[in-house]
Length: 261
Length: 261
Image 1 (tube, rainbow over the protein chains, first blue to last red):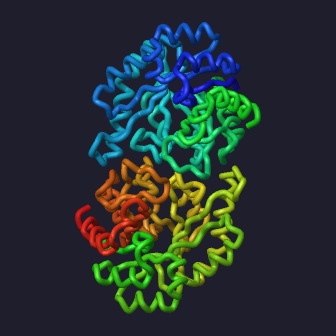
Image 2 (cartoon, rainbow over the protein chains, first blue to last red):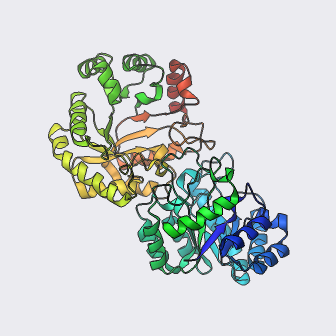
Image 3 (cartoon, one colour):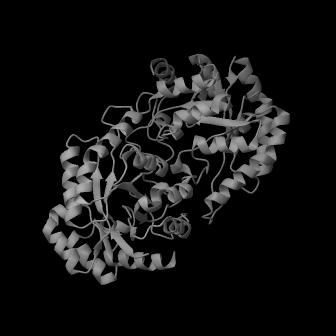
């Protein structure tokens, strides 16, 4: 499985141009950029830099946030950008409940309806939408929280929509392996990092592969057996540690750890 | 539904004798003490003080932690204590993976085996065991993380074992209401508090009922419809807020909020 870098991993140290250059230097063949970085560098320039450095886009982060007012125009733009970058998927972080609401079931229905509404445009553009279940502790950021729930949504929505499997969000799930098998070729992205037993922050304290307690080889095996043939993408949000380090050290460590784990 | 206090809610301010007295003064009719507090006050003394103040034990916290070396003797002692206090259930916080392990599935199998091993003693003592699924972010403290998983375990174990439903741990679950209905009279405890959207700590940042985003009336209705006739027990771990306040204010607020939510 080829290695990709989710640009969030060194976003505090480098801009997108530097990250693209870094990936090329470290032999990382895939890249998954965030839209704010794409916007800063410019869409055309991003596409040409990625191409000129021999990299492949493994995903675009992110569409979604369907609780926001301008969700529709924003997601249509995101689909265009993902198309322009020839991304194999637009990753959806689906958003939570609107301010002041306690209606979680309603938020979830709204999310499904919103995806249904932009799905025809995504199909036309040839951009699969990847619903990414987020860890239940991040439910206010994304109200899809298990693979099973995401796949139920996919079943209801039909062609052109799948899931992103991020080990950080799903590793704890007793039904993980069964749902990975169920997902089969609907797996549109596979993201890796590790869960630190000492985790103290709900968002930005992810570990480097091998430093935590996730059984990465077993999940990878499951994803491969399911039929996934894309990249494994390192995505580490780490305020106390990896965002503080020399980004070349971070990329070198990613490459080493993936070879080892 | 009558109100009970889980003694963790004011454990930083009061000892168990003060908490029993506080419950009586504030008209809180049930109490769920922790075993370290019971040990400090003495088991006989705890039983008599609770009785003399006209309170009912709604649960004993906690058995479990099956990854610990002395899990068996400790759980047998916990069963005796729960029996002595006429508790309707011994709450199990089941423990995570042993140090250095990445075998989550193995830890889960071990948990089930351990419960099976002490269950005959629990049945003899007339003490139902309540498996409490903990939030997936607390998987290293308890590797049972959804109601569905807990109930599957109950199905395998048979009579004398049920679940504790703590809204904090399960409110996010898309299958919550279906699993509460499935649990039916196997619900042995119902714990309430709230989820703060601003949560910054994985363990000790719970909110007071009404301050967060959990739809408490809807979950309570589900639990009642399932056939639960026990107490609703306030359990708030709150380092930054409620553990810093005057405990009489905390208890007063619990009573007010339960009346309102």
